Length: 591
Ligand code: ADP
Image 1 (cartoon, rainbow, N blue to C red):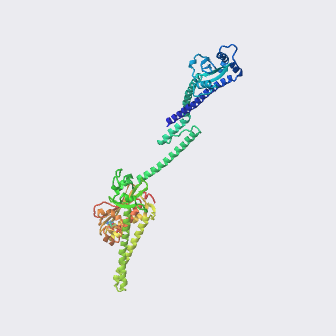
Image 2 (image 1 turned 60 degrees about the vertical axis):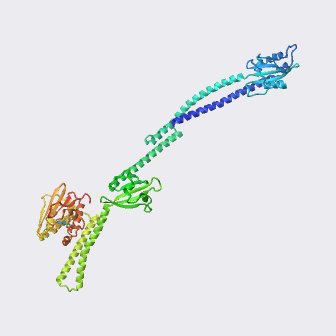
Image 3 (image 1 turned 120 degrees about the vertical axis):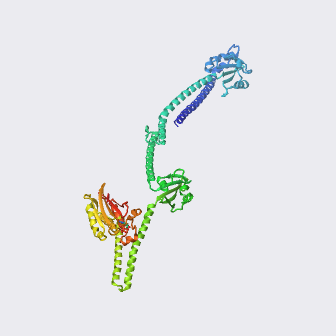
C-alpha cells in the first residue's frame, strides 16, 4: 500500500515534470525558430527600404567595369545590417537572365541550389521572399536593374545558427529536465514524509486493529484531514473494542449458562450435523455427542429432521418423550432461522422424572385420602342407616354397639383430617416453629411418663435410658414431643402384649440422638425406608385395626427435617424395630 502510494507520487511528479518540460521546450524552440526567421526577413526588408541604398545599387558609377562588382561594393557597406557573415549567411549577385553567379561573399557558388524564391525572381522578375517553414534555410531573391543590366541579389542563410541554437536549447532543456526530475524525486520523498507518513501510521494501526489489538492508540499529529481521520479511527477502534467486550461478556454469560444449565440443548444444522451441544444433553440422553453425531442417531424416532424444519406455527415446535435409564425425558424440537441457509433444529432435553413422580404421588395421595375417608364413611353410613331403618326396634346393646362404631369411625376420620391439615400446613410452609432451648432429658422422661399407662395396658416393659448429662437442643418443644409420642405409640401399637420398649438417647458431634426400640412385629428391611411415606403401611388391615392413619411417621419426618435433623429406621436384626431421631443442638439453620 505504502509502496504503491509512494511510487504513485513519484510517477505523478515525474510525469508532471516531463510533460511541463516538453511543453516548455517545444514552445521555446518554436519561438526561437520563429523569431530567427522573422528577424531575417525584417533585416532584409529594412535594408532594402533605404532609398539611398537602392539608388546606389541601381545607379552605375562612372567608369565601372562590371555592374556586379559595383553592387558588391554597395552591399559590402551594409553587410552588417543584413547579418551577412560569410559563413552561415551569404549574398550572391546573379545574372538577371541566366541566373549565373557573378559575385558573392563565398566562392562556393556551385553549392547554390536554385530555390523557389530564386527561380521566381529569375523567371518573373519579382522579389522572391516566400517563407518556407519546412526548409532548413531562409532566402530572399531581389531582382535589380543597374544601368541597363538585370541582376538578382540573392541572400541565403543556411540555418546553421538556428540549428546550433536549437541544440543548445535542447541541452538546456534536458538539463532542466534532469534537475526537475531530481527535485521531483526529492519532493516526493518530502511529501511522503508529511502526507504518506501519517497514512502509513494509520495503515499500521488499522492492521493492528484488524489483528485484534485494540489497545494501541494512534497519535493525532496534525489538524488536517489525515489528523481528523486518525482521530476518527481512534474513536472507531475504541467503540469497536467496547462493543466486542460487551459481546464477549454476553457470550461468556451465555456460554456459562449453556454449559451449566440442567436442561440439555443440542443444535443441529439443516443437514443434520451437530453445531452445538451442552454436557447436560449427553448426560441426560446417555449418548456421547460430538461433531460426528447426526440428528438421525439421536431423534429419528421422535420425528424426521424435515418434519421438524416444517413444524407448523403455532406452536412452532414438536414435542416428544423418552425414557432413558429410568429417567423420563421431555423433548422439545424447534426449527430456527428457517428462511436462512444457516438455520437448523434445536432440541431441548428436559428431565421430568421428578415432576412425573410428584404428579404420581399427588394422584396417589388423593386416591389414598379418598380411600381412607370412604371406608369410615361407608361404615358410618351403613350403621346409621340400619339404626334409622330399625326405628328403635333393635336391642339396646346392639344400638350402643352401632353407635360405638359410628363414634370410632368419626374419631378416626377427625384424626385423619387433623393429620392431613398438619401435613398440608407443613407442605405449604405455614407451620412456624416456636424455638426454645429444650431440655431433652426432661422431654424424654415426659414422653416415657405419658406412654406408661398405655404400655402397662399392653403389659409392655417401657424403659427410659437417658444419660445424666444431655445438652439442650434448640427446637419447638411441642413438635418434638409430638414426634417422640408418635414413635413410642407406634412401638406400643406394633408390639404384641408383654413386649419390651426402650427409649435411649446420646450425644455426638453436636447432635442429640434418640432411639426408640421395641421387640414387636418389626418391618422387613426392604420396607423400612418406606414407612415414612404418606399412607404407607406394612400391614394395612392390622394398622387400620390399631387406629393408625398411615400419616404419623410422615408428619414426624417433616417435623424433624424442619429442625434440620433426620429420622430413620435402624438396620437391626429382628424382632422389632428401632427408630432413630437425630437433632442438631443449634436447631434449624433457618426459621
Ligand atoms: P400408622 O398410623 O398406621 O401407625 P405411621 O406413619 O405411624 O402410621 O406408621 C406407618 C407404618 O409403619 C405403620 O402402618 C406400620 O406398618 C409401620 N410401623 C411403624 N412403627 C412400627 C413399629 N414400631 N413396629 C412395626 N411396624 C411399625
